[in-house]
Image 1 (cartoon, one colour):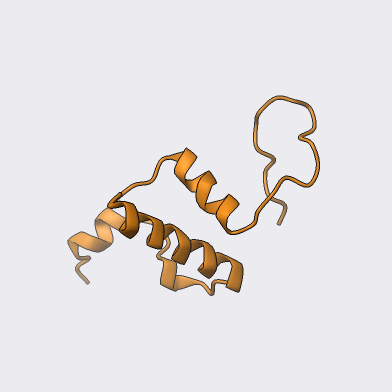
Image 2 (image 1 turned 30 degrees about the vertical axis):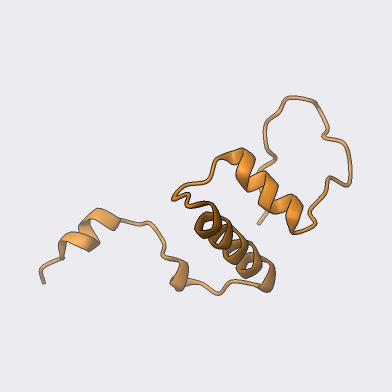
Length: 76
């Protein structure tokens, strides 16, 4: 069986349609897409992503531990 160019290029990268998204994930994706359309930005900067998160109401609840600046790996 022949594999198409798209499948070869994609490799093991998952598509957004390959697993269910919860309401928070969909809200975030929609907010980023709305920001991109409103500001004509194909790729928002990290500062812009932080702006979208703050707009959605996300806030730090505890100070970071360790002070290394490295993100904690998700458990699971």
